[in-house]
Length: 304
Image (tube, rainbow, N blue to C red):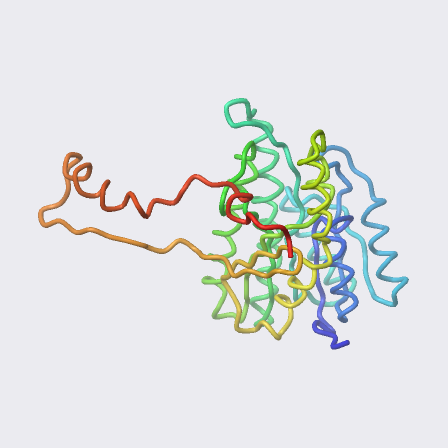
């Protein structure tokens, strides 16, 4: 096996289970020394337990790799700085940041509380900023570094009952793009993965009907290690020319996702009025309006 990230030092947030755990383990298998960050909270962000993160560290060490545990919260700037300092203290540098930590507080929008909104934004979006910012100056000084962030088709496409999660994940896509632009001159790359994987974050999907049960069985095929492979690739020098991109991973499928660009335009001498917009722009654009779809409508076939 080619050791894709041999000698590099990686920080993976939310690495106590699911996708984060598999990314940390695969990075280590490919030669990285890993800071495993996990607060051990529930899917909704409650509680704290060192056990899950410690188990990931032990799995890496048992396989012959190097890893240390950090239990700080991504929601706190000081916690993010401590994570990075943990990498520097244990391994002398930092080369890779994987922003994977996340929680879910699903609720239909007109019933969503401020706390449900704030908590999800804090972990996903603010957390990704905090950890990225804590590593940024180190990346800049050494002239290299790779960020891998987790976005979601809940934001890129749409889903029911996830306004907080969708907004955070769209924000992460914008954050990643901005980091890629701002830090390109320093040799720093930033990309997003939109993962489809069976993990405890989607393990609460109901199975009350035969259709729901069949859907869950198909989702279970989408194991987190398939996400990890793409993360390791994006973190490696093999992807040195890849930055500012969004990849979706669905079982054995990998997709390069589109990003917003103009698809049609109209010009009118003298400008527009509400009336002329209604008369001309509405009819001209109608056939090209983006339909109000959910992820399942766009990815309508079974995982391959």
